[in-house]
Length: 226
Image 1 (cartoon, helix red, strand yellow):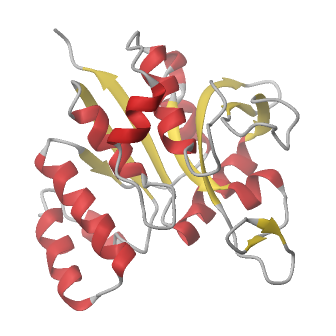
Image 2 (cartoon, one colour):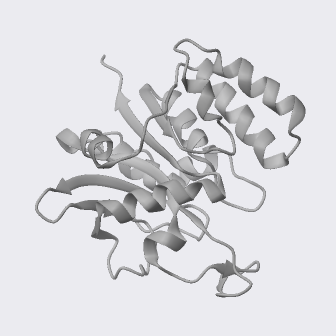
């Protein structure tokens, strides 16, 4: 995992690491340039997924983002998620939701899959099996146990601050310690290294709380067979 070039490029840097894992050494600068960037900086999981779909990968998103997806949409197999997203967009005019909706519609049209299931130890262990990397958007505030951040310079402020989202790559599971391996592009890193281990329950909590920042997804990418 390379260090992210600035405070808003954690997503493309994580995608770059996943590409390298699968023997696709794309230039980090090109990935950053090509991925949709939000006005305030950063990006969304779905735009990382769309970049991979366009480059011959299969993509599955496990979502826990209740700002975008209603849990009842996943009760009926075969329900038209694209139709639901369009219908929702007619009633909710928030700009970030509009941008996310456009990304998800493109994702579904390109063959991306969306799944919803209880996020527990069993699911995370299964996704991490066979050394499969899992790219996730989560709450950095919860993961690091750090102060919330405030202002244009993202200054630590435990009173005025807001929770902060972040992207990392999960890879590997230690059954003895029940810890998940984390590859994290933040440098310098609050954990002392860009590669560290965190208890699985803390990882699950950080992922779920990512819903506060339009994160809370697990992205699994696999190269299409030639």
